[in-house]
Length: 568
Image: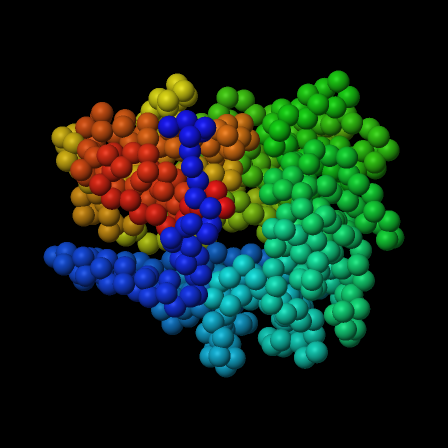
């Protein structure tokens, strides 16, 4: 079928439009009916109750790692278990955290708060007041919706501030400018949102004044995605920033100094940060300036003062090569830390500017597989936290320093005997000939007879990277094979890998997934009668495409929280 003879239904002719009323009684009744069918099917499985209990044991385990982040002198954690279903914000000291069973101080109990206020509160994070860290702006949403309520919280008294900052339910954000003023973007009434439903006004709100008297400091366009303002504080230096986000990927960026806005003439799709006197850019597309070309995926730096005066000669801190890309970076007191993926293998580097040049050093890693990295305290410490795992190794949590020394703080429980399993990486040829990798986790004694139940997971979007993460025992111990697809549209191999499967080229994500499924069958790992696939959100869109394009290739499709109606 060609584009010319495709007839798309208009909304008034869509017989399923009622399903979009997500809280509507008709839609909810339909969901309940489908759940009954699914539940009845699952409960006929001979080992259903054992699997159910196993899954609950893993999800509710108190042995899982309580990851921490430092704010002021405390190390905070957000914890959920069967007792704290909605979650508990708590804190401790580093010395206490090192113990096998740390003593935690409860700061905010969401289950208790929800019961007291008769609300279905979901934690959406907190923005601290710096540098004192004695207060924060707590984000709460009803039932996990995109809209949030923002309330000021006293971290010393461990209670909400009486007559403190309070923002009613809306999409948007807020951050402290100083102790007595916050920068906000909210729904201020008719005409104050973009067509995407996000704030287009940034305002400055002074303590103890009515919200409707907040001063407008920037106004975006109705057609923008949204407009945001915040105070950037890195290594103690503060910069007021306004971002006019024109699309999901592009934004105009302004510095606000003494109520004067200065536009930063940087690529609209670049990520940026201020580090000491430096402006640091992480490029998402090639940047040609002053007769030089800086490659997409590069990390470049220039002194901010020189940049504002028109200088454009950047220092290159990282430049990608074939399938070696910068996955993330962090700032400590004296170093930049680079988390690099070299053909899906992780490497860690430190950078420091001294002797008029950037000095680079590779730090050995105590773990393989996936890697998450964050600084302990960019003002006072060169230490950092490192977490990671692979398909067969439980998550580990380390405390590292600039010398490349690592202290193991916590290790997650092993839910199965990994000695019986193997993790392998393969490649499939997509429709256009591009090699797309995928990982297979299986029993060592598995027979390649096309009869193995296999679960193929895919996402492939928004420049999100996927890679080795620890698998629980339920699927693998019941004879299943787990397969992780590395698809174009994701971020595993940098911006070019992402942009190769967007917009008119989105079909490449689907083609990559199909190629991997076919390769699994060719290798004898599984067959269409034994192959299930799963994906959520953007991965849910992928599942919908598989259902319509290649239903012959799969036996089971798990399509989670999808956005399927891309036409409307």
